Image (cartoon, rainbow, N blue to C red):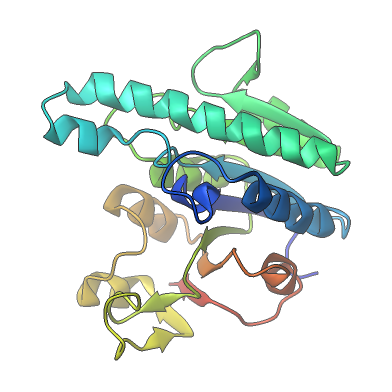
Length: 235
């Protein structure tokens, strides 16, 4: 195994599967099985999930809602997704802990950095919910921040495309995929990998990002085993 500790970032939209809204239980089950297989190899995994399948703060702001209020609602959506993944993981035999940046004692633990690292050392999958706990920050920023805090070896961003392209491959058939690219090249080419705050955090802390297709079963294991799939971003 090439990695000791991984931060896996999943978008909320990825949990929809083929649905237009909400959570596809089959997709969540597939993710849980893939994560279980990697955990079985002794790799420590932390997870951050977005909430866009339920509520998007930015979209709500455009329709007239106060941005801070909308972002807090989005944080609650990430907790719903985190609970769904936690349930799926435990159903396939994976021990988990859900930790959130906003206190919700009845359903999860508050985020405490040392406690999170201890859970990981004990082989538990730690799911970080509610983003950073602050409005105006995305779950990409939460993923970058938590990865740095827990000393992860990489951020692996699971999406529905198999890497970073010169353009959106779902809209432009001529788009070309990068196998590897530097942070500076991403800036220069104005490519959409993560939001700028998250991306800058990763660059400044020399934390590599790997973008890959999480929807293809087995890809997460291949990546964790050192196979070159997706796109690697590094300094």
